[in-house]
Image (cartoon, rainbow over all chains, first blue to last red; front, side, top):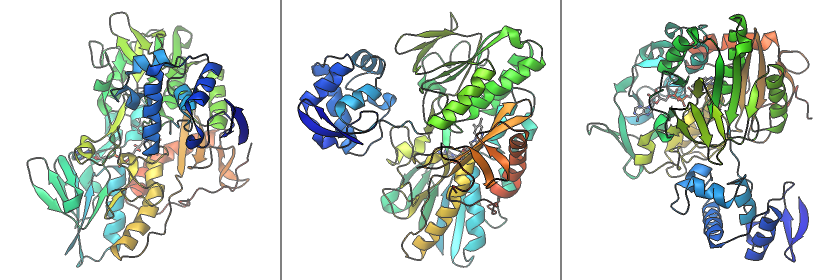
Length: 103
Length: 410
Ligand SMILES: Cc1cc2nc3c(=O)[nH]c(=O)nc-3n(C[C@H](O)[C@H](O)[C@H](O)COP(=O)(O)OP(=O)(O)OC[C@H]3O[C@@H](n4cnc5c(N)ncnc54)[C@H](O)[C@@H]3O)c2cc1C
């Protein structure tokens, strides 16, 4: 665990750069993490980010399939918004823990 | 009489029936088990059918052979559980009451979840080996296969026996080498994961075996659809892989019964406390085996280890005592690597598979994350152990909790 300054705020992040405490998140932090991944956030992105945060608060485990069935965005759309890392990048930007595909 | 009801008579349900039947007072408890089918399948054996190592006869037995003589058995599809009323509805409307319930309905394949899977080429050039029908159809197809692209695809997690697709490509390598056409068969391993396994140390070792055997690994490939005309699979980020034979692990989901009961996550796996194995919603319902949503492998070995915990906890609950046994997610999987060798991994919720020896430190006889002949015998023995010890609910000389003894941190 390390402390990092993102968008002027000190936050705790994991070894691979995920926020440790989702309550330290704000939209500016999201924008800065996103630009580091080459993504410029739009309203469409924020709809997904907010959905991911809500679900995480409820304790749900997230998968690409479940987000694709959420009605917010389909799987193709999710790939368009977060190329190369539909769930990993979106989770990182949403300030939630790294998704575990558990096997 | 108090009533214990077990839903599902596969690996886990049958095992729990035998354990509890021997323990509970006959005058006090009536035990009933329900399943839709009369045949028990040794699912780990499906892997060997395409290569002609096992036949159908080697993997099926009547379920009745494994039930204790006095248990009530009902063969019927289960419609739903109404937890608030302690009732289970069977298809056709029959109602069963219970004081305690164990859910062991496993996971099933859902080829319909993938566009183009159950289409023109299904069981002609596209197969699964997660059902006996699929495995037998693939065996026929392999007989006259003269070469081309053989693709193994993992489209979704979780799925049962996470190492089975790895074993499949290793065995295919050996099989086509034996037929003298290995140089004409391109074996490709396509997975939505970032490597061949989820945990780093095992991924490195198993990835190394892939390279040694000249099997191409295509990772981060999230399957969108299958083009039957042009024999290609496509990912959502618009990459494509062509195939002559496609073998796939169809999307795995829990029983629809779980969804109808309002007890599942979005893949119909029952929401379960990963330590106590109790349902998150109802105190008198416990869950075991592939049906549960806890974050460890869906495997028979896991059901076996979890069984010891469930046994203790359900007895505590029946006597109104606190649940003290805690499941650590222990999994232990033999991995066939072909040519009479095998590897072995042993892990739990917190500790990834590590190298070393098992079960005795420094001695073995099995080598963890090593490719040895002895590990292959472990897998061969597993079928005997499965029919004679595991299903009967007898003890194995391995602790339910994972042990660090003999393991090396790397
Ligand atoms: C190809 C393959 C290879 C494998 N290799 C290994 C291995 O090497 N080692 C290992 O440990 N594990 C292995 N496994 C996994 C292992 O077989 C499973 O994890 C194990 O069988 C799970 O047991 P279970 O009781 O939870 O589910 P199952 O044994 O699948 O039983 C579920 C039962 O519930 C019944 N059921 C479900 N829904 C309903 C309903 N609505 N109404 C009535 N009945 C219902 C089903 O008919 C079934 O009998 C392998 C699996 C496969 C497919």
